[in-house]
Amino acid sequence: MIRAGLFDLDGTLLDSMYVWNHVDACFFARRGLEMPSDYPRAISGMSFVDTARYTKARFDLPEDVEEIMAEWTALAREEYALRVPLKKGALEFLRALGERGVRLCVVTTLLPELSGPCLARNGVDSFFEFILTTHEAGSRVKSDGHVYRAAAQRLGVDPADCAVFEDVEAGIVGARACGMRAYCVQDPISTHHPERIRLLADGMSDNIMEFLARL
Image 1 (cartoon, rainbow, N blue to C red):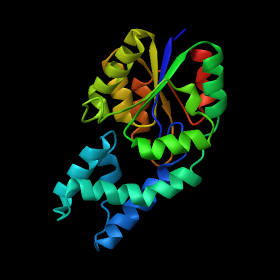
Image 2 (image 1 turned 90 degrees about the vertical axis):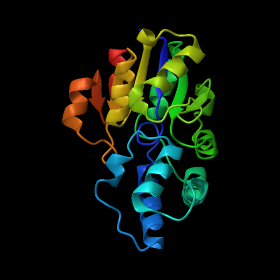
Image 3 (image 1 turned 135 degrees about the vertical axis):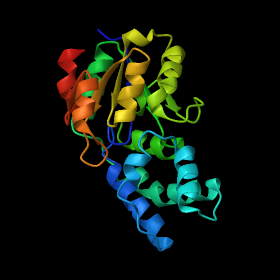
């Protein structure tokens, strides 16, 4: 049995990807730009700050990185605080792992000012020992595995005894790179290349509760 579970938020525990579709649409519309079809895939697994850097560079924007992040955060803040729900089975899954004595943490690109109020409103914040962002861990992308190793070290748990729950390929790749089990919670917006993910992951489902029997 695993000793620790490391959870992504957007698209994994939180049914929140619609928020970022709205944020992106507003952001590009304000500038008279059309969002390229490959943009969501290009930024998948990037930290919040690196997504801002990438967006600034790709579209040659005059705003600095901090201004871009502030605009995105302002557009998303109310939705996370008041409306973003948990995904199907998330509460039951966290409760079941807690009853087994599995230690839990969050590993995310999402800013604490967005994730904290959302987790508290949904009544799941107390399940987690800490929230570690990719930026805090000094990681540029999830695919290199650094943020997961940092989380395991902070928990004092061997990576081989950890399971990562993600919705994107970069997260699955990173988890496998540091010797952790990796499970993909499918999301219709964020889970690209499902056929590749299926080859890498220890399990793949749109209902996280289906993984419980495998742990």
